[in-house]
Every structure is written in structure tokens, then in C-alpha cells.
Image (cartoon, rainbow, N blue to C red; front, side, top):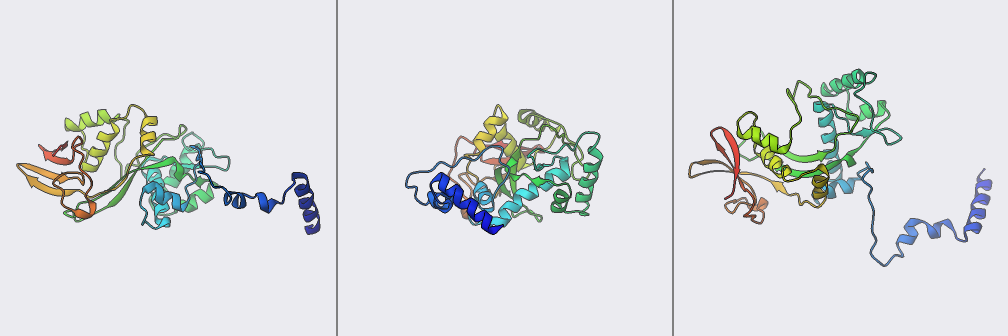
Length: 277
């Protein structure tokens, strides 16, 4: 068998007029002396370790932890909303909401929530692979040090697969409904819902986009930096300053000032509101 393969290889190389090792990408790329454009398709769901770190814009983050943040987002999304960002061998998103599959995936969701199964075990059993490429990093918030329970959280945006429908889990999420960013801001301002500072600032930013396509296009060129709010009390205002506020004093997280953008989030009459310095 080995001799036959070698004969076949020599025959093909004679036909194409070159040895395979001479025209292999690793050999030919090394000879390129001009700029090279690398194209990444929108349907490519794979995110290598180093790409995860680059997309998060955290050069010092361990590459495995960087990709782990994408996986954690996929797990949380499935646990809390029932949306599973995964594909089968043909690249199709699985049907998990029709009559024949809803009960099965609902049971898997509960087992994952109860820690009876890991996300890795789930996708292996279902012959799926996770699709972190369907997530786009958007923001990075850190809980102020005045809080006893703190988080270091990355925010992602994603398009919901057309064949899946989100539904809250009645455990960590007790209610859900579709709202536009402007609609959410209006209900928050009237006290019908509560948006905490990171969510309020993020939703205000989202309200500036007319379409999801515009949002995702902007996210590809958006600068992401760690936002550690700084608590303050001044002239009757109680709230937090953001890193681009002129009065922000935490040197390690300070950002250039942006006078045209709200840089403070204050609590007034029980409702969080953004304001300029």
C-alpha cells in the first residue's frame, strides 16, 4: 500500500510539474513580500485560542481563559434562555424548539443547570460543536470595590438562530420579553423596569443603532477596555464615575475624556440615570 501511494504521489507531481512540499501554503507564504489580506467568513464559527484573546482585546489574558469566556457565555445563554449556539457536522444550527426535540433539549438544559452534565458532555452526546464565532465581544465591566460581591464580566452580542426561540428558565431569569433599546430605556425611566448601571449604559449605546447589521459592523471596530466604575457623592448626586469622566481617579483604568458622552451614572428618585460631567 505504501509503495502504491508513493507511485501515485510521484505521478501527480509529474502532472502538476512540482513537488507538493514546494507549493504547500507553509512554503509559499514564506516567500510573499507584499501585504496579505486574510478573509474571515461570517459563517465561520471557529475561534482559535489566540483569536479569542484578540477579539476580547486583552493581550495579557491567557489564551485558554479567553476562549473559555466565549464558552461560558454560550453555556449561560443556553441555561438561562434556552438558545444554543452550536452546529452539527453540516454546519447547521440544531432544531431544539420543535415538538420532536423541545422536550429532549429542555431536559438537557435542566441537567446542565443542575450540574448533572457539562457543556462539553452535552455537545459530544448530541454530536454538535459549539459556535463561539457567533458571539461578538462588546464590553468589559468590573464591579466597584465598594461592593462585597464583585464580578469581572465580559459582555457579548449575538444573533439568535432563526430556528430557536428564547425562553427564560424560571430560576435565574423569571421574566423575559422582546424590547427595543429605546423601549427599554423608556420603561426604565418610568420605573416599570430596572436597568442597573452597566446595563443602562450598554442599552443607551445600543439605542444609537437602527439595525442589528449596523451594530455588528460597529462592534468589529469598537475599542474594548475594562470599565471599573468609581463611586462618588457630590452636590446631591450619588452614583459612579466612568473611566472617561474628568473626575475619575483610578489611574490604572482611566481613559481619555469624551465630553459629548455621559460619563456618570447617578441614582435619582430610585432610578439610575446617566449624565455628563
